[in-house]
Image (cartoon, rainbow over all chains, first blue to last red):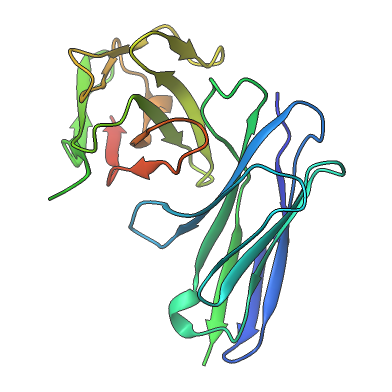
Length: 113
Length: 112
């Protein structure tokens, strides 16, 4: 059973503040790490797919880093806005890539105006 | 146009029945997936399938079977439904494991 952990489980942030949260995954047998954003009553939407150690990806105010040697990824949100409120999921794919995503339980982010 | 669609959106049925959930993608992707969102909102992979290979999560009961009539469809058939099967089921597709997955809207199954 693959262990993908996300912390914190939930997070309240003031509008305008920046924030970050963590995804940890098995450092052996790494293939890829995905980040998704999931709003209530909607489907998960892709943010990033990361494959290389040291990878940094950016999409607007959201960015992510990857450390495959130690088995963690950080997601950063700069200048949080109310529309950033969602659950952020990371998902791990082990070596070979044939399996589907193993998701963490998510970080539930609430931006307070 | 909806990229990944699922039908029905809601399904209420009795224990012991057999039901199917349909999934279609118009993205030309090679790989499709089924996920189950459990009562704690946790997404778990059930199956991944492409033209060549079906990979089954070993924890999935054999009452669940994916059926793919063609590359654009992966239907989920469930035999002898149990109360614990109540959940939201998401279909997804991608071009491969290094590509983002596109999720359907989910099917909310309630077994009474």
